[in-house]
Image (cartoon, rainbow, N blue to C red; front, top):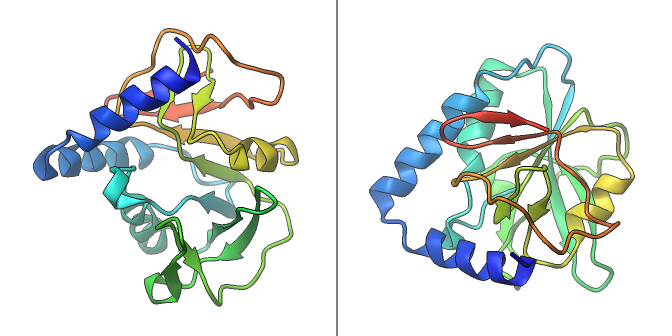
Length: 186
């Protein structure tokens, strides 16, 4: 399937989720996430969810990390839609977040982060069995991931699709993807 078809179907599937199912899937994702080895992680970059689009609720992950691994610095993105690039900011709490024009929560006062990141938790609409992902199509994460050696982990509420047919040289492959039932290594 092509990215455009996969994107359309994934959005439709997500929006059909009722609240109870969505919450259960998020709890299951968190339980899988908790099994990762964080012993070598000093800095973790994580996206902030667009709950209205039924993205995985990463606030659950942030709360768990803050409680069990307070030594890990949490970094969150801020998107520049004119350049299609992101800046990276220290997460200082929900009270620092404000929605932008696209309904995406972004940090307002969290300090800019310029140094190495050990692990990136990546948003996606779908992924395939080869480790490639379909996002919203703007390329923010592919540009960011080209310049980092961080471990790349996607979060998906659904299992992998067989194959994304229009992968290109700019698509960055995931190292792992977490689903509610498993962690898949690529």
